[in-house]
Image (tube, rainbow, N blue to C red; front, top):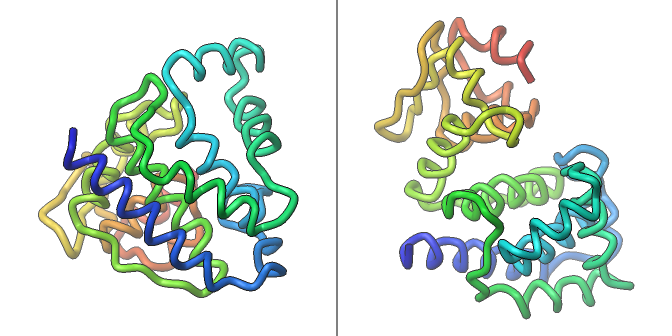
Length: 207
């Protein structure tokens, strides 16, 4: 557990460093995460860092059990009046260890996938620790689609990481870096261009 939190905290710190050098106007650029801007995704990360098990259940009930609505409320609540205000909020929660009722590795998925949602459109790069990416990929492929995962998808393709000892699923192969595989199974179509193999078409149709 301590290892997971140390990786989560390291990812938050790295993102804060990257955002600290970002001009305010770039926070309005579209992210890879649906209709959210970079600013929205950062606000979401503040919200998820603050979320407790009880708070998640209460928030979901208030949102009438609509996950998208709950997330939207969280972004609205934590998005500051300026990028710098939101960044300061992220700094204040960077060392927290609270979590919703989900596997602890889901905190890694949040930081890595949303980190790329922010960095890729801005032309920023990060060399993520291999363990953080692999643990995130394994969790996503064990999690049902109804909870944002890709369990059903990997019943149709085999994901093979070119940079890690990871092969998951059963079907035509899709190969690429563990990070690109993680992004693809998390619904980020931009990662499809980084992948190879006869299963890429099947994967593309699924996301």
